[in-house]
Length: 61
Image (cartoon, rainbow, N blue to C red; front, side, top):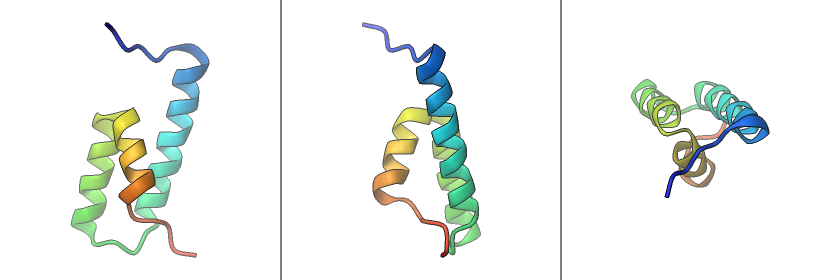
């Protein structure tokens, strides 16, 4: 069983990952945590986004 994300689903995932990265960089977390979260989101886009959504740092208001 193969999991491929293509077309509009891939584009939506790309937009969501960019949103997550911008939010991570704008958060109050330490630099080390920001780097780890960014790597996680970039290397594992779907799983990284879901993990960030549940547990990751948020941008400051």
